Length: 612
Ligand code: G6P
Image 1: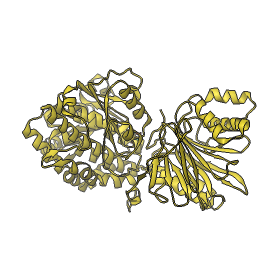
Image 2: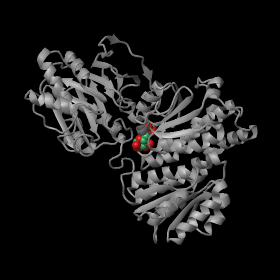
Image 3: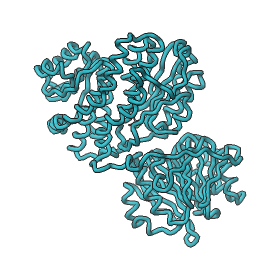
Image 4: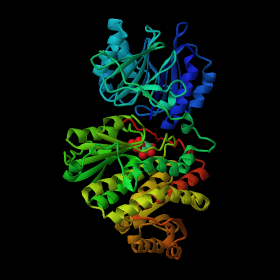
């Protein structure tokens, strides 16, 4: 999703902005641009459709533009197709004001009509251009850019992170935030803004996170932040201590492959410090036993793969706690008049901590009295800051759009949460608790075993990469696992893929099975293995080519029927999806590789979805 950078300092801004935008590329985008102010040339804007390299080529790496003050943007199109004109920055008609924006101005049509009635001409189809033009309109009345910013922020509705340049304020960059993330960087003789800390790390590790309603004025000498009443405030600073190399490829061809391989280490980091002397210890959780015992249900809210983690956890958490668990897509939860109250624990899962639907759904749950627990990867992200409790998945920066290690750490962390809650509720037998802990501690090394057999998956990818439609089937935990396997495949290989609860096949989907249709049959869940076999037989009888995933102990039985079998080590049921997802990630990866797809930056997708 759109990425913003801004810089003001003593050195030329353009190379700094290009470097920052490079670190935001992973968020997903379709065009890029920068605006630079210099006393000699005023505002210069260069923007283009396509990859950042196209912009860098136009600018010869930044040499083409002078000036130490600038803003840059990678655009993920919402209003208006991806083309040069719709790319950001957008400039007011008199060329005095340039704006970059992440978010959606929901009432832009009404403002646009108003401005057109005042004789202002628009060049793009975007919602963002109204911000630049409205700023010009108000600036023309008062000659005071801060007064104009205040008026504009009162008038626009929706979500925004904004970077604003005004040639009449030649030393300052103005930033504003509501619902979309924006981070301030305090450099040595320079100040920066960015949508994501990765874009700042080369220049500073001293940052603060803007809150909704705040406006910041940046100059080379420092940053002044104002609250929504335009009163000056001082912000808490955070120090970023992770290494930038964690967000680089380190010799791997793709971030996705690197992140798949990092899963054992990421799970160790997430889980091991939270298990002490055989017990789950969640020091960072402030909920009490009385509160847990008062609960009537648990809701899980998330989007995308994080939602699929919720689907797995419905089975696991219900089994462990005997509380009803409802898993709701955040975009649906927001508008479904949800039945939650102070007897509902709402678990909010998000890698980025910035997914707008998830954030807003969480706020809705809080308004209705529920307590919220964030399961988040990005430290100090909006969801982390706004949930009542937060538990971090220590997966490190995840760059590939298709999530892998974040998914795995979310699963493992919620397994610990489930055991913790079950222990407080008295719904887990001591021997089951103990064997769960023992197995969780073995999980990283079992994943290493699966990864060591990646050539087998590569072989199956070479056998199936030419298929144009794939069905994932499974029951119970395998059904939830299939949802993630199917999403991974469609995200990065563009193969049509669907996942079904095996029992539902006969209610419609089986009509789509014909000679040679690829069915990935998930049969890791032992209690239902025989039923899984029956479904494999059913689709085979209609001509399907079946690639099965099962545990080592069921390999021989499955080999008698399926066309191909991938195995994972045996483990307790709740951990099966943690092992089973790894070959599915690898299968998607290798298939996408063989189809020549842009694996880390799949078309149309964004890593951090900060619009509705
Ligand atoms: C995007 C990403 C997915 C992710 C989803 C939810 O669609 O491409 O990989 O699962 O957003 O993101 P979150 O950061 O909230 O987990």
